[in-house]
Image (cartoon, rainbow, N blue to C red; front, side):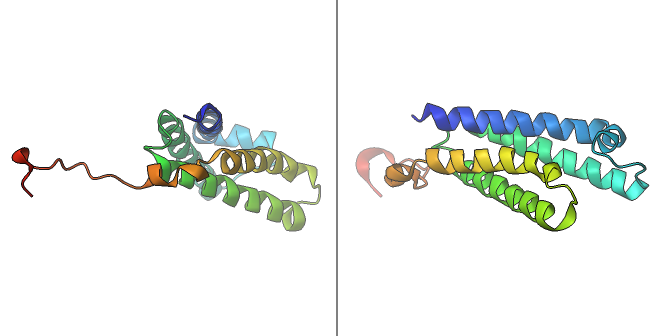
Length: 143
């Protein structure tokens, strides 16, 4: 089994869940840290929703890391998630932020994990990745 994939999935999952908890539990404080002066109620609720989503993804990624082959769809989901967040960070840095440094954290975190997860993905074990039926054949060898 690929220990590197397990470690990367666990680290990304736990890190994302902890970051999500901060958005969920202290959204106004997180906004202050990130330079926002005042949030409307809608933006606070949006930040809390993002936090809840990050917690859910993080928890499931960490759980899936225990047996990545069996939970290969969660591995794929985590790769797509990291890649999409990297895209958002790149777009934000190029278009939205005046200071590229504000988006650099997202580039480093999501870019590192997207590349690591893609590199550690079990491409060579394609036969192992096919879903197996949970149904057992009937006793006596009859179909």
